[in-house]
Image 1 (cartoon, rainbow over the protein chains, first blue to last red):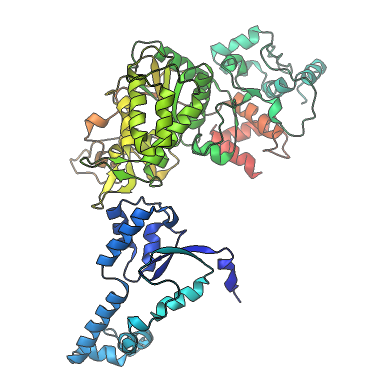
Image 2: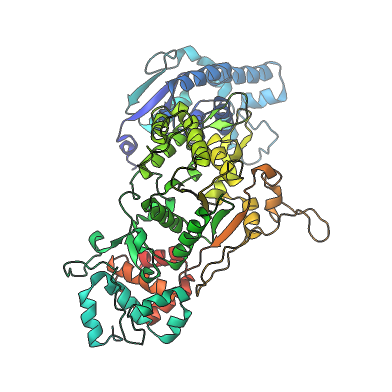
Length: 169
Length: 451
């Protein structure tokens, strides 16, 4: 049985940015990938635009750069907006009665794969954008200060639990 | 020990630090060994040492004689002689010496990476170091500095350490020393940087401030030299350290003053990892284009010495390439080095041919077919066409591997310092180590650690 406590033996400082807790000890371009909608390439491009050196950790980032970072992220389609967009597109496909929409609805592979065997991943994942209609961003459970404030808070986070939370959003 | 006579044993007990030298020399005290040494070392024979098999080397008067006779449990710092300019004599070759306190500052980044990792503070005096010191002295006596001396050799042969020893020597002689031991830190993306508006250059305030602090620590006596505005160099450097925004300006002022001012002690510019000045950095600009090393203002300030846009009189420029980091490759610089003249030094019995990886800068083969990046990397190097950035008059100084005598001395030191344990130092053992490592200093050190 793995020890759940071992990762949070020391309190981990977090930067609360746009509704997401980003770990301070990580390199900036990697920490930004924790945001839904930002991958490694986008994270690196953001750092290039803001003049953040490649090995900069989040805790070493000066405040003016943090402000510029949040301003830049606000202009991008990330997090809740991106999920809304995806949901809308899939919903549109279902509504217009297209083949792809029907496959999403049935939870079967969309991109032309075989179904005689090997359709378990599709069965598990493909309907979730439709089932998620009941949740909206307003009802998401947020623990901590309001998304408008940028603050660093010390949390005793259990890393596995944090990941589960982000999947529910 | 079977080689020593009774009188040898008595004189061994008399002098502790020379004992090491005695034992190692006596293992190889044969006529053939004497002939293979360079002519300058015959002074040792003149000072009373006999080199017949089984005899000891009677120590020089200049070697330190400790007061007590401590048991040889562990080599303590008190037993090692200190690096002083007086020690730079052929008679002391093979002796392991401790760096003086003024040079071994424990600040991070003040000593080469290899030395920091290995946690060593004492190094052996080699004939190649003495030759380099003589060359640098000769260079400084000329009217203007005409060439850029570059230490060359395969990985681990002792380039950074030789540079450090030279820096320490000239610092003790009272020269002004500009020593950059870890220039890779400037280009590997670990320093904050900001663009200089209106140009394509980038500034690194914290890195330059740290360099100025190291410069101040290494040269405590900078109050005599004044800039054009009347400030002393020490004041200018201190301003740069206090306010990193002005650090680049301070650095430029200091370098300009040192270049133009004649009324000063000689200047030694020692740059380690010089291939980082001619490579791609880990930085990117706002358009996500990779930044080249010549776009960093800190690097630019020093490269102006190398390409002679900033002349240096009454001084010497010494560089060392670093081949341990594969990210810091500069194929073009390697080609330049392989085509540059070699500075003659006294022959050693174990010259290692430098393993030149990039021999050719042309990008077509004998059939006129364009060669790929992998086969002719120097021709695809972004620095190859930028001739105004190239270093002028490179001169190559080859650092040879250890010869038998040096291997014996260093193994005896490792044994005394308990780096090498449970091993009997016989002639056969020393020969085996020499053959297995080829005289490479780093390989020998790692072999001793692994036992």
